[in-house]
Amino acid sequence: MTIDVRYRTIATASDGRNSVVRSEDGRIGLKLSAPEELGGAGGAGTNSTQLFAAGFASCFMMALKSAGRRCDMPVSQDTAVTAHVGFGPDIDGGFGLTVDLEVSLPRMERRDAEMLIEQADALCSYSRATRGNVQVGYSLA
Image (cartoon, rainbow, N blue to C red):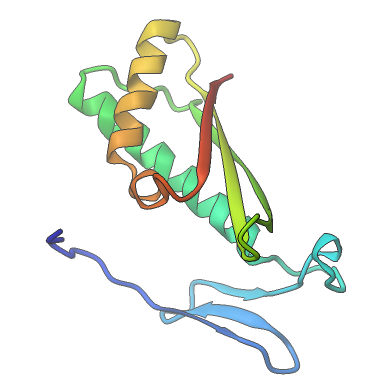
């Protein structure tokens, strides 16, 4: 697969006395805390699963907008995507993710909304990257 890269970014996670993740441009600088449910101490920081959920929801939202423009069905400003992400051990001894995307497309006919979600799924880079590797489900709110 050939990709015409138009944007590139860098983020670094470090585990010194204060675990953090930072973007190269300084726009992200977040304290990290492992969830208690996974044996961590918990705490006020975020974690990689939350960051993944935020990234997937954001990417799918942009894909919905793009699909709406392509299909001449613009999405309203009150459209929302909520990513419910689960993380835990899998049967192979590693770890896996589950994702359920809850999509709210107010004032759009159900049939049109379902078609738009299908189009967005084909466009979204997170959807494409996880296809066949992560259980992803969609629901219309």
